[in-house]
Structures are given as structure tokens and as C-alpha cells.
Image 1 (tube, rainbow, N blue to C red):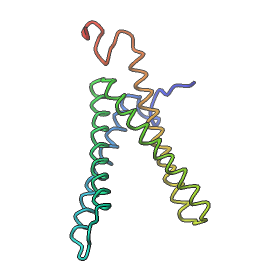
Image 2 (cartoon, rainbow, N blue to C red):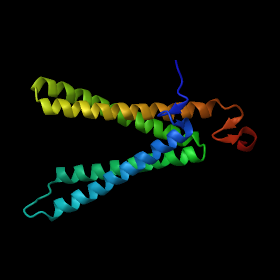
Image 3 (cartoon, helix red, strand yellow):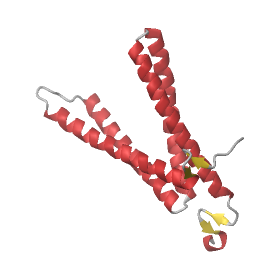
Image 4 (cartoon, rainbow, N blue to C red):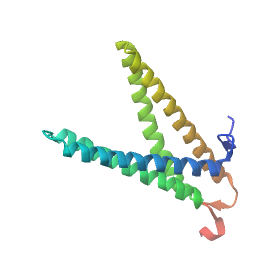
Length: 164
């Protein structure tokens, strides 16, 4: 199996992983700001009753946004300090999240094709393109994680003698 040696043609794996983490931190921060703004706007609308399902959805979205920010901060910190454990946590989280999103997109594509709604098909294809980018980013970080693992005499970014 081939190994990546760089990211996007202009970064090595370390800088690419850092750029991915920073990009995802910025996007996650924008998502959190959007959540807060949407919640404030929803709560200020007249004749709006927030039932328990809406409240649960809002809480779930906030928790997911915060978790997303924490995991991407772990990625950036792990890359900056050569901490493989932090990269592993990000890889597990991102693998699960992106896997579930991929399943959702596949189901969405089937539903869109069955219903024949052309704009929904285009939307699902566009989201599938974004998911493909996320999988590429996952592979970049995975290869950087493996590169760190293969360096002889190092345990989690510290020399083996210093780790004992």
C-alpha cells in the first residue's frame, strides 16, 4: 500500500496535519457561533414555543460543537508537541464521526434517487464531496501518526530514555 508523504502537494505530513486541525478549529468555531446566533434568534421569535424535542436537539448540537472543538484542539496540540496519543484520540473520534456521516450521506443518496428530487440529489452529491475531503484529511493525519510511530527510539514524541 502506498504511503502519503505530504498533504495537498505543498505541506509535509506534520504541517498538513496542523493545517487540517487549524482549519477544522476555525470551521468548528464558526459552527458554534452560528448555533448560538440561531438559538438566540429562535428564542426571540414571537409565538415560538420550544418543546422538549427542540431543546434536546439544541443541547445535542452544542455538545457536538464543543466536542468537535476539543478534538480538533487535541489534533493541533498533538501535532505541535509530537503527542501521538492526542492524534490517536482525534483519529478515533474523526473515524467514527466521518463514518456515521458517510452512512447518512449514502442513505440520503438512496432516498434522493428514489424520490427523484433533483436538487436533493445534487445536495447529497455535494455533501459526499465534502465527506471525501474529510476522509482525505483523516488519511493525512493517520499517515503522520504512523510516521511518528515508525521513528526509532521515540515514545510519544520523547526519547525512550527520557520516557522512563
